[in-house]
Length: 137
Image (cartoon, helix red, strand yellow):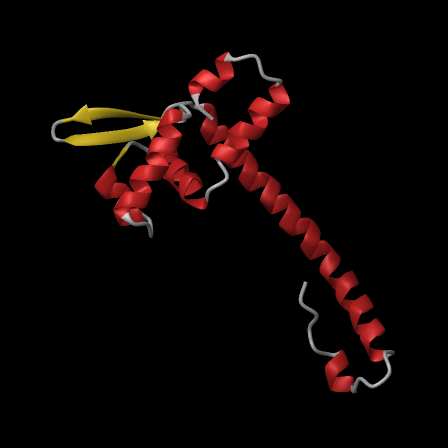
């Protein structure tokens, strides 16, 4: 999502979809997580991420074009920071959503495990050791 695309007349749902596509890369999410803590120079980000320098540069450029990351020069370094403070809130909201989904799934595991075991133990040709093996979920 670039800043100019929002100035055009597009439906809000389309602008949101483009925004989430911009966030749809694990490297970009990790960059935003790190920048939510504090400003970082490129070498700091490289030290804290498993990413090639060229790929980091590419992902930073995408985030900069979208306006989600800003940069400034300090001495001989370029420091990157979150360009929109609400990004922190969005990352926290995503964490809460994921934790809730995991908790819901964990609550269902006993029920799903019991039902799966009952179904496989009644299936013809399966031995009891097969029925007790965990079902991937």
